Image (cartoon, rainbow, N blue to C red; front, side, top):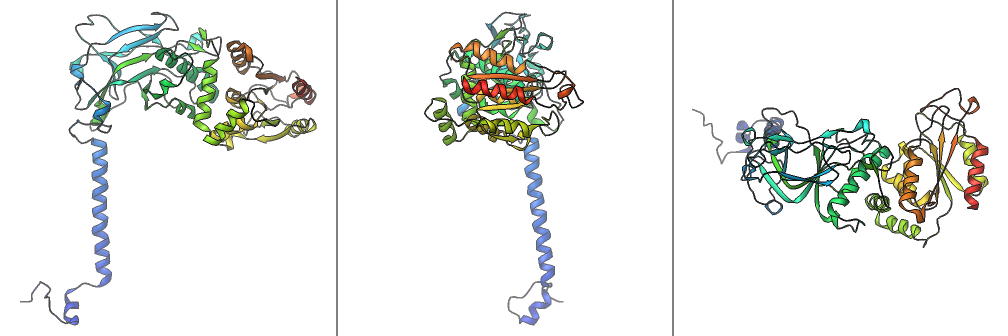
Length: 452
């Protein structure tokens, strides 16, 4: 009977009788490797999706005992308590401080019922900063311990949870006015950092969004939140074990104080620090260290900024049809200029353009105008309006900035050019119409700016 084991000592010809061809061996090696890699990929996906149990349970976060503290089980979390940081129940500008508030993907933001609470519930608070008809009253869910079950729990005593609703938070100007600056105001109030010394930036913070969604404009990054998530319960599948993971916070703050730069909020930002610190945060986030140093030098008058107009032309609508004539006007008065399409630029490059280069901002009503929030002092803003369209959105923000800091009330100068008849309408009207800019009016604004 022929031996099925390859003898160790045979001639080359004899050994080849037992070995498959080289091509077959290569194919076999490839198949085995492919099956092995596929198995590893499956195990990795299974581990990620099913969140395999470890010493800390089924956890979507890494084990970090140093950042967690007692209690070690949600069943031992103290009873929730609350008090108003600002306003009172039922008022638009109420802000609530809550101790021992919890969250999980399955249940959203909630607190645990207890005998100490009896029939008391956390009151609903307005979580948006906008017009009264857009107010959104919200309160966390009240759950019994019997409704909760999770092998994964953490209690964060050194991290504050902020809870807010959003309004048009994907839109740059609305993000800062209706979301970013109101949130900044509440953070400042909670940490009692009235002049923004910056100490609060060293603290740990999470953000839960209750209404409007957390599809934030890029500017949310200036706040350095460690985690941003939806406060509403997520739809859970049976095998998504990580959705039961529970986080409880020693301290949470709910609401936005109905405070913004517009008069449709109950309160307006009362002093210069909100605007100045927003300015600083944006520079820190989006400028390189060298550019930030240069921007500060310009702001402090150590470097002279050359007159330069940035003329913003929208890509898809609201065109200024005689934009070349506008550029020629600036050239005539010795002001260098450029025509830009911001849609083709990263947000970082946009901030750099308006913080370091622009002394004049020109454009049809829209997001581009809002770059004055971090432009240099003495910037001129020229806003263009089409036939049958007007908005005081940007102008009111500038007026509020001036009221907040009277000593620098003319830092950002504002002018507008309106289209009042068919001669400038290009046969169109309304928000997204094209417009022919009145060059005589533009010349007059430039002349006034240069002699002031």
